[in-house]
Length: 326
Ligand code: NDP
Image (cartoon, rainbow, N blue to C red; front, top):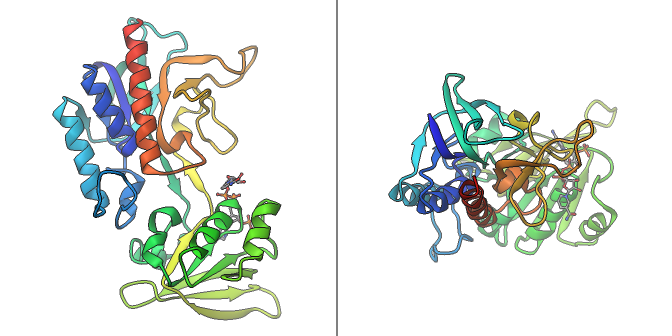
């Protein structure tokens, strides 16, 4: 299928790009990917997206965005992109190529990558049981629901410290569950955590399981596993926040576009334009014409739906300009 604009991903960035691209008469096709509605749908309620004064269920919000894109003619394809071939010097005769489920080939003048990022989880069965019922990977999104309660944050990096500090502003008490005897976070972040009377850092602790009747009410921890003084401990908590990192979903594009050491797509100068990876004698900033990135796959900092939506709009505007220049 030959299209002007192909969008990969169905989170806030992808749907917003679709709304803008379809209103610009680009007749976009959006490949929905493995998680319809994106990462947001793993949370319970969205209260910080403008336009929903009473809060909104994530599925409702994503469906609203989808219907808005559909209204202007976006075509949706349910499936997963399995292979891409981005042309280094694309033209209407040599477009970018994207395969869905290995078999369906889409050729496009412009591709907007909005594949998001996935939070890392510990892999415990109880973590899955209580997802959305006390387990969260985003303090900014869900912290408000735990006002004056007791929560735990897992991780010892900058994200964990930032989340613990944020939660300490809302909650009665915050435990940090850190597997090493030290924090990995930057000195200033460590200082903030260690000086906050509401935060108790549990060094050398790992989580065995979460407990509770229908929702998280506690966590079984193990202290200094494998050491002579190993000990099991239980903490009573209402919320369990993972802050052990994110994976940007960009592996598929690694041969074609520049990414940072963590895998986030590199864009420059407030634009969504993608660049070729630096190899041989390419300049470090050689654009890959017609390839744009929006949302969390290119954003290690904010990870917010409203920011992702904004960058989706930017990507579509840039794709439109590019297509008109062909
Ligand atoms: P990091 O990779 O820096 O830290 C992850 C933390 O999670 C580490 O403490 C790690 O432990 C722990 N962890 C990983 N896996 C497990 C596990 N299975 N069980 C228990 N603990 C685990 O990720 P961040 O998201 O914190 O940061 C990513 C990048 O973003 C960093 O470069 C960071 O500096 C940056 N950042 C900067 C901020 C700022 O400047 N304001 C804010 C947020 C992030 P261990 O140390 O033992 O490996």
